[in-house]
Amino acid sequence: YLALRPAHQERLVKIFALTEFGVQRPVTTFVRPMHPGRLLESAAHAARFVALIPFERHRSVGEGAAEAWSSLHSFLCRRRGDAAEHALLLCSLLLGFGLDAYVAVGTDAQGGHLWVVTRSSPQRTVFWESLSGQRTVHDMGAADDSARAAHYRTVGCVFNHESFYANCQGDDSVAACVFDLENRARWKAMEVGLLRALTPLPTPPLVAAALPPPHAAEEQLEKELRALLERHREPLGLGTFWDDKLCTLLAPALAAYEAERVHGAAFGSDDFQQGIKRHVPEGHIFKGFPQLFSSASAEAVLFGLLKSSVALDVVQARGDQVRHAVRVKVVNYAEDVRAVWVMVAVKYKAAPRQ
Image (cartoon, rainbow, N blue to C red; front, top):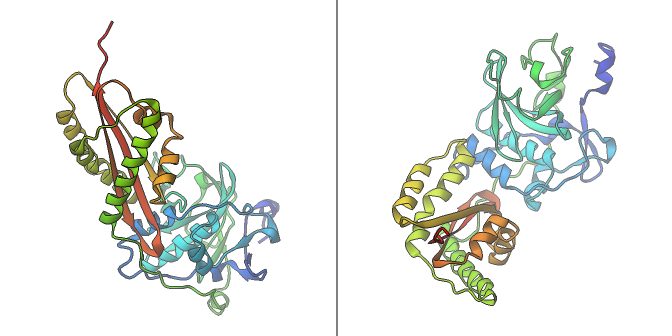
């Protein structure tokens, strides 16, 4: 491969990776099809589950022996990891859903990076960003190819549990890359029989969440947040009055936010807007601020909210007929991974114009 073109010396073709135990293993042994059973409904839910696992930066892709990859078992036990662990887990889950999935090693706008590629045809592939769950289509025949406009820059190789391909194309940029992996003029393949004979790293089954039921967690967090918000406003000389109906009207918005993260499209946002318009009287102002958390700790949520000037403006709102609302939506996934959406809102009478 290196003899084909001098430029190949500079490409990110990663054949081995260091495990957390200090052992060099072929990268293909880090991936294995994972069948989630009933714990994840679809490939889109798998991407959402992986994206919710907190990111923790390790060394960059391409930093040699110092760059270690954790096994899927270690990653799931810690429930945090770098882009490599996220991509390896997502690829394994997509393989379990029957997709033709590969981990891609290359660069993005920030430098070395790993993401996941699935193929429906040589000309049309989908890029899965494991850190966000976002999917972009890479269609060589389309004028508005979203992947070419995304932040991915180059690709050096792709692999899964039984194949490894090094990019031989003259231009390794994502914009010019054709993922016809069977084309030997474009991709240099490792011997399949050799790869299949390798012993993979242990791949544990996903474990169902042992968290409290979502509705109970939502009600408890809302109760605790109300108390904390009242305590926050009291030293400012502000009383706090709650609008229970407004709290209910916030629910469709939170459901739409989570649906958009899973499916890429929001459902129910129109219902939310219509409900707010009907509830907020003429001459009143409505403000709302949503935020996603991975913890249901009321103190951590309030601390995160108050970092935003918009949320702080809502929480410390002053005026006539001020009424507050807080709504929580909790979605539990496997391995005690959860999405905790919180929205704080306020309505009050607008000050008369001078």
